[in-house]
Each structure stands twice: as structure tokens, then as C-alpha cells.
Length: 209
Length: 78
Image (cartoon, rainbow over all chains, first blue to last red; front, side):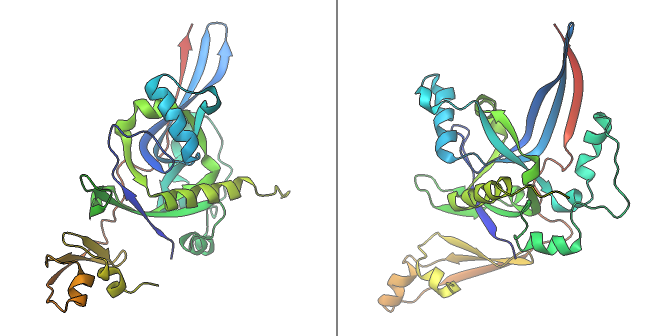
């Protein structure tokens, strides 16, 4: 059985940090440049978690908030990974609009799924190299103490996955300005777990098919 | 692995603990005004309330926001 991660609610004034989960994160880039203008592609990820190291994220968040800071701490962008419903991701339904809008022809055969039932078991045991099974219980933070009490059910997650292959970056200033879309912050150990798995995924040796 | 009793020994008044997995939860509320370990050490009586709730499996606790990646494609003129 995969780990159940613990998280706490975050306040609007809190700096950004590794393990922060945001909703409706926009990732935009210039796809084409012509004399009269530029073509923009804008993705909106329903949920995404910060995987960049906490010290880097906090330092850059401070720079954005204070408009001042050490040049050694400057970091243009923050790494994030999207969180999907496991059941939707299995059948690629989360990618339907992307393929349509970007005019990408789907070459899947009928039996293609993002992961089969055997792999699903591996995902649910949290042993899959590409996916991190995510269930989260989010707690309120008691005033004047760090103790967490009271489960916030409408923020808790069941049966979700993080797809490490879909990582993207956004400027820290975007996340600072959109702290209202932050849902919660994973406790350190669970945020570290995700970043470590992500690093392992990125460090895998590319083997030819 | 800690047993529930081990975990509860560190409980203080007003703490709650959730147990169980997806199928159901038990919310445990210590009613005594003493931490459990203190009460055990002093041989004092304790009152613990246990409230059990069963999750509705038909409505798993997904976060809002949907699951599809939204995408827009547009031109910005200079």
C-alpha cells in the first residue's frame, strides 16, 4: 500500500516551498515567432506540486516578495510535477484536449493504457519509477502552535498519481502572485520523498527501445 | 511499528487522531484534562471518545480542479 502523505493548510501570506500543491497552474510558452506576432501555448494543470529544493524555492520566494536578495540565490524558475486522477491518467483522458488542440495524431492502439493492471499494482505499492501514488490527508494548523488538528476532507486526495514525465517549470513570481491557488503544503518528509523519486526518474539511464 | 496505544500515550487534551484507511476512520478525542501517559502514571481515570465515520466509497475524496490538462493556443500580435 502506498504511503498516505500528511499535509497542512497553508496561509495566503506564507512563502512558497517544496511540497506546496497548487491548483490550476498555468504553464505558458512561445511556440512560434513571426514578424507580426508570437504563437502562445498555454497549459493549465489542474493540480501540481513543487519539487524544487525547499531552500532554493524559499530563497527565490523571498527575493520576489522583498524585491531584494543575494544574486547567488536567484533562480529563474521552479520545477513542478502535475497530479492526476489515477483513473483518468490510465486511459490518457487527461491528454485528450492537448492532442486535439496541438493537432497531434494519436497512434495508440486500443489496448494502450498509460499503465496496465500489473503496473497499477506497482503504482499502488509506490514502486513505479515514473508515477508516484499520492494520497494526502490535509490538516488544519492550530493557532499559535504547529500541531495539526482536524482533517480537511475536501482538500484530501485519494487515488491520485504524480507523473514525473510531465514536469514543467514556472517562474517563482507566478507562484508568489497566485498563492491564493495553493491548497496545502506537504509535510517535509513527504515532499522530500517526491523530490527524491523525481530525481531518480530523471537520472535513469536511457535505454534504446 | 507503533500501536495505537503507543501513539495515544503522547496524546494531550484536545488532540484528535485519525485512524484507518480509505474504508473508514475513527476520530479519537481525549476528554480527560490530562495527557494519557500522565494519567496512566498517576493511575487516574481517563475518558476517551471514539467517533467512527465510514467514507462513502461512491464519492472518493478527490480534490477539485478536474483531471484534464487545459490547453489554449493563440497569437499575440506585436
